[in-house]
Image (cartoon, helix red, strand yellow):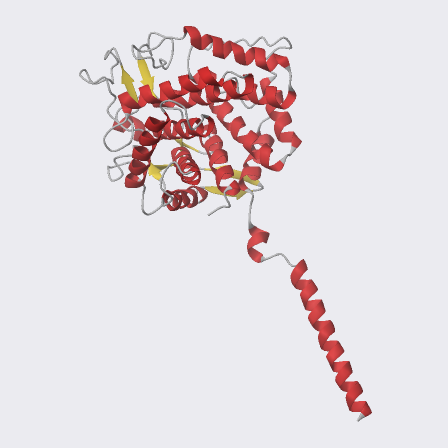
Length: 391
């Protein structure tokens, strides 16, 4: 009886020990999914930093500025100091110790990278970045406008009197962030709302999406001689608009005059995006409103921008919550375009820089890999989904 009892106790103890060891193993184990999950934002940043130094990545330009703004978003989450140091090294190529910056700022495109000046002032407190940013802000005081107050795409004869959707993201977020950083939000918020409203008044169509460009003079080769509008709805132009709109809604107060109009425009825009989303891939086509036309193809940068806009807008309650699912499908569609090869990321099917043109012009644009239009918009999108809990 005593031996039987001892055996039973011994067996029980062994079973308990086995169970304990199994539990320890379970706690220490990494689930298969977690083990294979890639932080795509960090992977893109590390790959780009490996491919380029701050000196070789390119000159002062909006595509590099967009990419580095995306890199800053990753820095804010990961706190990897090398990400911010890289950004600062690039900006310091152009900004002297007294804040002099050798740029004319005669186009909206040249202003997007100005957001990095505001970021660096915020991060370092160095006055030179405020001085450089003020040059952009002061330039806007004399910058040419349409009769109803829209900033021309560029202060040049070839772009005179023209509004391009692209220009909104080049300047509006800068205005939002300049006002917040330097205590001038009342003026900058009003200007941001005005620009978004003027552009939408000219460019937004009944389907909620926007034509690429408008020429007040109606003299551009692409402009309709009656309306002044370009003929096509280019996807990335719409992407720029959506991101500028959501950025401003995030930054302006609830009591801001004109906010209700922006919300109305955003809801129409969201409906248009949902209407033309490719049901097979979740992405959007290069010419967004002609998904079945010959030669059209789904483009990565605008799909990233649109996924970001819908996700952020739904999260903030600017549009109906069902758009979260539309955004999530787009996000998965973009993720299908990124891969790792020999430790480096590759993001494919990105339209290179694009002018205003006709259908054949847009679909004939080069489909590049790792173009900064795509990398920057990918990082902005991915950080939105990572912070929102993924999909």
